[in-house]
Amino acid sequence: MAQTIVQHHFERGIEQGIERGKEQGRIEEKQSDVLKALHLRFDTVPELIADNISLIRSLSRLNSLLEQAVSAKTLDEIDLGNFDK
Image (cartoon, rainbow, N blue to C red; front, side, top):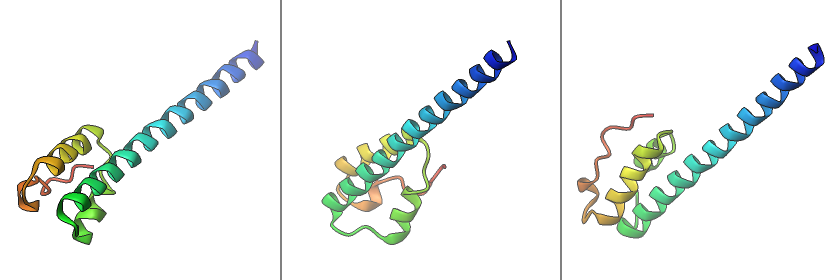
């Protein structure tokens, strides 16, 4: 019985670790997408902007930035002031 409980918690921990890894992968991919879109659209991206994007952990925020990056005519049109992490 005790071994079953330990095994259950161990397996649950592994599953949670896998999910966190997947989420981190999605975040890193979206950060890369945003930076790529900015580079393609505006050629050069200030280092401060790139650094701040790499700190964002919200997929919805990154999705919003990606949409702005592909549609903005200038970097100033992108809401880069609020880097919620």
